[in-house]
Structures are given as structure tokens and as C-alpha cells.
Image (cartoon, rainbow over all chains, first blue to last red; front, top):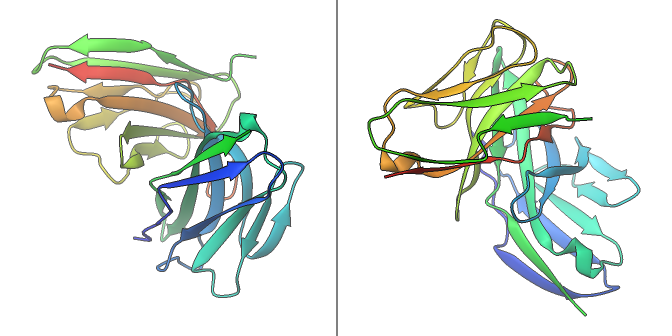
Length: 112
Length: 115
């Protein structure tokens, strides 16, 4: 099974770019990488998903190197409301068996 | 739009008792999931279902069972609760089959305490 590892916590200031990296050394060929955001007492919320190279949407970018053993979530110009826990998820299917492995989460604190 | 509805919101349960956590979605998604979230361990998959009538085991299935009689409902049953099952339980759903490359939508969670 792919094991995902993330930093436990990060601090940043408003207006800065934040990069959170997830390591998934045993990622399989069919696996996708997804990032979620979670606020206290709420369920996780989808941010972005990718398979390789770079993906960008209106809130974030996801960078995945060629070997796919890590991925980096980039949040441009964070605000106080971005204070949350961020999770990476590696998910895939092999011979009809599915796996969904979440990282342990990175607690981001945005300071004024 | 309700999305994913979980019930109850919280529950205190005596050890040894049977408990069913309910999950209903109104998005007609094929795939549904149950996760547990524990401090320091993140979210761990208990069971999943790719379509009505099928289920699969996740990372931590022991002590739990699920059924998927129709598209909308995916109940999670603890046959005989133990204190180690104290956790926050999240139900989720996603379109398509398997959901490995699609967005998952999560409920608000059920906080279960087994004493």
C-alpha cells in the first residue's frame, strides 16, 4: 500500500504563497493524487486532483514530478480563512481492488 | 441541496452494544465510503462501495459491516462496540465507479464515544 507522509504543521503570513508537500514513495501506476481541506467540525472538502505534471484551478496548483513519488500543493496568497488542515490522498485500483490512503494531514496556520 | 446526510451527529454508546450509523446522499453518486478520523492518524478507510449491491474492505474494516441496498444509502454497523471504536466517522460519495480520479463529497461526521 502507498504510504503518504506530510509535515505535521506549517505557519505562514497573509498574502504569502504556501507549499505543502506530500511524500508517496510507493505510488502505483494507476494511482491519482487528490488534496482536501478540512475545517474544525466539518468534513474534508476537495481542493485539487492530478496524475502527473501540473494542475491549476481557481484556488490552488498541484505539482507532481515525473517519478510521482511526491506532490506539492501550492496555495497562492493565503488569507486567514485558509487556516485549516490539508490532506493528500492517494487512490487507485488494481485488479478490481480499490485503495484510498490519506496522509495524516498538515495543519496550516495563517497569521495576520 | 443536502448532499451527504449523516445521523446521528453524535452518540455515546455502551461497550458491547450494536450501533448503526446512517448515511444518505441525494447526488445519485455510484461510489460511497466510510472513514474514521482519529487524532494524529488522519482519515482511514473502513469500507467502500463502488455501486449499489457491492462493497469492499478498506484499511481498517474489522469490527464494522456495511450494506448497499440502493444508490442513496450506505449504513455502517458496529455489531458489538468497543472503546477503540471511539472516533469521528465520515461518510462520503463520489461520481463514477471507484472514485479514484473524481472529487469526493463528505458529510459532516458522526462523533461516536464508546464507554
